[in-house]
Amino acid sequence: MKLQFNAWGFRAVLSASALSAALFFVGAAPSRADNDDCQKRIARADHKLHEAAEHHGWNSPQAAKYRHQLAEAREWCWEHSHRWWDEDGRRWRTDRDWDDHDHDRH
Image 1 (cartoon, rainbow, N blue to C red):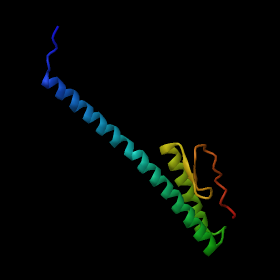
Image 2 (cartoon, one colour; image 1 turned 90 degrees about the vertical axis):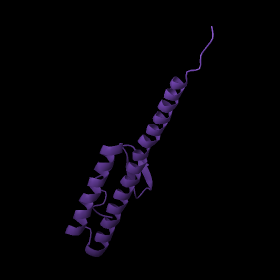
Image 3 (cartoon, rainbow, N blue to C red; image 1 turned 180 degrees about the vertical axis):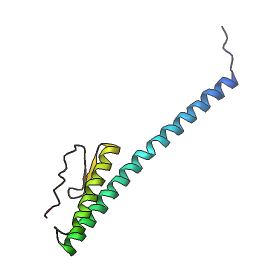
């Protein structure tokens, strides 16, 4: 039995492989982008909270506003990637174990 080389079949397999590889790498990019966005959101909210507390006090309306933004940022991260950035610990956390009142007083 002699095998024949089918140029069209080879091209189809090659094209499908290239398309699969491209989709694999494109699909992986948003997850990295989500992690970076998540980390930036939480870091920014945490920084603004500390700035507001320093200038206006921990019990000020400004600090309450940023405390709320920090809780929202953590919730957003949890909903999108089931992990959140612990700015104080400088690490990713995979348990939904943050305390909404951990920045009430510092």
